[in-house]
Every structure is written in C-alpha cells, then in structure tokens.
Amino acid sequence: MAERCAVIGVGQTHHKAKREDVSIAGLVREAAKAALADADLTWSDIDAVVIGKAPDMFEGNMMPEIYLAPALGAVGKPMFRVHTAGSVGGSTALVAAHLVKSGIHKRVLTVAYEKQSDSDAMWALSVPQPFAAPLLAGAGGYFAPHIRAYMRRSGAPEHIGRMVAVKDRQNAMRNPYAHLHLADIDMKMVEESMMLWDPLRYLEACPSSDGAAAMVLAAEDALSGQYPPAWIHGTAMRSEPTMFAGRDQVNPQAGRDCSADVYAQAGITNPREQFDCAEVYVPFSWYEPMWLENLGFCDLGDGWKLTESGATAFDGDIPWNASGGVLSSNPIGASGMLRFLEVAMQVRGQAGEHQVDGAKLALGQAYGGGSQFFSMWVVGSAKP
Amino acid sequence: MSDETTDAPGPVTMLATPIGLDFDFTPGIAQSKFLRGLEQGKFLGQRCPVCGKVYVPSRGSCPTDGVPTTEDVELSNVGTVTTYCVVNVPFAGQSIEIPYICAQILLDGANLSFMGLLQEIPTDQIRMGMRVEAVWVEPDQLTPSLASVRYFRPVDEPDADYETYKEYL
Image (tube, rainbow over all chains, first blue to last red; front, side, top):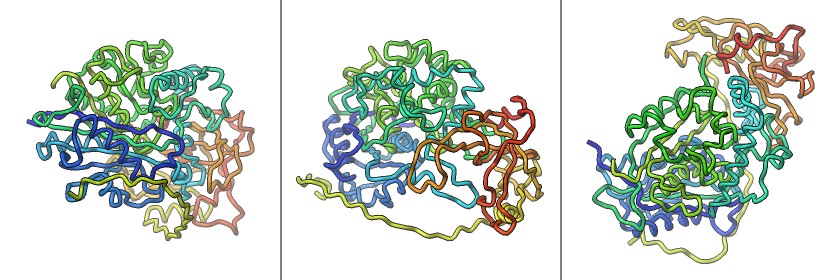
C-alpha cells in the first residue's frame, strides 16, 4: 500500500520573455522559495530535491543540476534530475510524488524551469542530420502537419484554433503570473497574425518564456502550509517511439494508455463530469480539441465541438487551462509542472481570480517530444 | 548548515559565448544501406518479417515487433503527400528559403512517411493526397545523405484517395 501524498506548497515566477535580473539559479530559487513559504517550511525541512528541464542544448548549459544543487539547498541531500522533453515538468513532479508515496521521503521539493532568453530552442530542435532533410522548423514545424491531419480527420472548421487562442489568452488576464497579457485579444487579431507554419498562425502558438515552477510534496504525517493539501489521487507516465508504422500522431496510444491508467487509479469513468477543471499541455491552439479526444472528454471527432460549445471556457462546465495555459506562458521545462501545479492550486482554492468555483477534483497533463511522452496526475481536495 | 543559503544582492551579468561542435555520425548497418542507396539515387528500405511493414529509412529492427529487419526493399521514386505544413518562420541555421513546403511523404510500397521538401508548386496549391516524385541531384553529385534528393515535385496523376493513406496520419 503506497503512502498518501499531497501538494502542500506551490511557487512560480512571473513568467516573462526575458528575465535579465536573475541567473538560472536565481530563477529556480525564486520559485522554490515561494513554494517553501506557501508550505510554511524552510530549506532544512526538505528531504530531497527533484529537478527537471527540457534539453540541455536549449541554454547550452550541460547538466545544470550540478550547478543548481547549492541554489536549491540540495547539498548533502538526494537530488534527481529528470528529462522527458516537453513533458518533463510533469514527470519531474511524478518522480517527486513517487519518492513520497514509496515511503522513502517525507517532504520533497520539486522544481522545473526554462530560461528561453538564454537559449535558442528553434535551433536546438532543428539540428541537421544526414538521414533527414533539413526541413524541421522547431516544434511548430513538427506539429503543424499533425494538426492538419486532425482537421482533415475530424472535419473541424478553421475557427476552432482561433477560439482556443483567444480563450486561453483571456484566461491569462486573470493570472498575474502569466507571460502574455493581451487585453485586446480577439478572433480578428489571431486571424490577422502572421502565418508561421500554415495552418498555424503566430497567435495560435505559445510564447518563449523565462520561468520556473516549484512544489513541495509531503506525506500524510508531514503536512503543513497555509492552504489545505491537494491530495494526489493518481500518477501515470507513458512513452512510445517517435516512429513506427501505423503510429497515430493525432491520437497517440501513449496518451490514451496514460489517461486510462491515471483514471483507473483515481476512479474516473467520465472525465468531463467528474473533473471540475483541467490543465492540459496545449502549446498550439489545436491541441485542445486533439487532447479533449485523446483524454476521453468526448468521443473521437467531437473535441472541436466541445471547444466550440464553450464547455472548456472559464465559465464552461469543464474549464481547460483557466490559468491561460502554455499558450500564455511557456518556460518549456516548467510548462508541464505548471499544469500539475495549477490544478493543485485549484483544488486548494488558492487560484485567486482564475479560481474555478468549488474545484475539488482536477487533471494535470503534460506531453513532450514528438508526442511520445505523456505525464498525468489527478489531484483532489478529498483524501484518496 | 550548508543548505541555509542566502541570496547575494546585485545585478546579473549576462555573457553570450558562441560555441561549435563537430561530430562524426556513425549510422550503423541498416542506415548505412539507406545512405548508400541515396548515393546510388534510390530509396532502400527494409521489411519486417513479422508484420510485413516496410520501413524507410530502416533502423535495422521493427519498433513494433522488436525483431531484426533483414529483407532489403527498393522503393518507388513516387509517393503520396499524407500531410504537410508551409514553413514561414526564420530561425538560426535555416538552409532553405522561406516560405517552403514541408511534406510528409509516403513512398509507394513504404509503411512509414518521412519529411520532404516539396517544390515546383505554389504553396497555396498543395493538397493532402497529392502524388509526388523525388528529384535527384546530378549523378556526379550524389552523396550518402538525403542532400542527394533536391526536392519532391508533383507528378501528373490524380490525388490518392484519403482512405489509402489515412492510417499513416
């Protein structure tokens, strides 16, 4: 029988295009200190540290965990570094949760970050190789053809992507930590923004952000903090190869298996009805309807109808990305953890202006690589 | 306590230091065959003995069945655009003028698409299902790399029916 585990502290930076006032160490420390303060703890209360970020090549800072150990109070303590591409913030939190659930540690600090202003992610994701034509243009170039495939498969009308782009930016207006605060965002503004990777426009893509996220996870007999704990009801991670014949990149098997696993642990049979909200990794607008289907919130082919109906809006029956999501803040390594952190905030009732009324049970999801890594957790206000 | 760190006040100095890295790429047996095929102006793949699927390029084993792919298969020069995007964003190290069409191309006889550059067609006329062929460099310029394929271009054939390639999306 695994130990119960809860989120007892959360912290994040104000995500920005360029944080010139802090180094990477300063950035992660800012989030970690906020999480400790929220949990009413100090560095010495922490048993172990788990850190994650996206590929080292982004900032060109190899094995940054070595240099960040002192900044995170990890000297003399266990420290783990996790890497699962864009899903890493989620899987980092999962490793931390497992250290508590296994009974090994009582309080674990988990941190994830990216300092995109120090990096060139487009370049790092587009390195020429002899067995591939030099065509890949960053993540957008990779995902845009799969978005086109989704549009063809589902018959979704073009405006769905723009609706998500507007909705998530409107949500971000309620979140003081969000990178983008586009007060005038509307369908026309998205439609008039530059076409970057046809069919994806500039405002249908995530920004490049500097930022960090941190959480303190604790065992049942080590609770503290100013807000009630967010109990972890399920954790799951799945992966699949980037290439195999018959691979479904619109609705990946790994994503379906991962949600089936986490739903079974949390007793979820009808995600749309049972969850009060969800934070899902949507770096390009069309991934909302795609993941609505992959996560079983509706039947195959109906994701775009759910988006169009307003069900996923802040005042809908199942708000997705009330924080503004990845479309509003994208410190890549931290983006997955922010999804996990934001749902913890929701069920703890500490989400402020973007609090979903009465949120008790919520899903956090992150994906990464060429849709080959999926991490998820379910958190709730009630003890599992 | 060593973990009771303090925050040192003061501004952060940023310094950009360009670095380079040259490396030798060792492709292994299966990919060497593929690359040698490119040097001869043809696409060489391998078939899985269990599921019968043809991989191009092959990594030497079937990712689904976990067995070596031993049967070599020469593929057609013609294939189908399963999906695509038009890249219109500049980035460091880019070698192709924007906008360009990045297409997923499923060669006839293959069970896995790969990314190819599509030219000789305006970017607003490309379609899913379009039939295309590889245009190779001059014979004396062939090398063991995909640089041997200059690009793909449309062939004068009706588009492939969606049903024939939908499982490759």
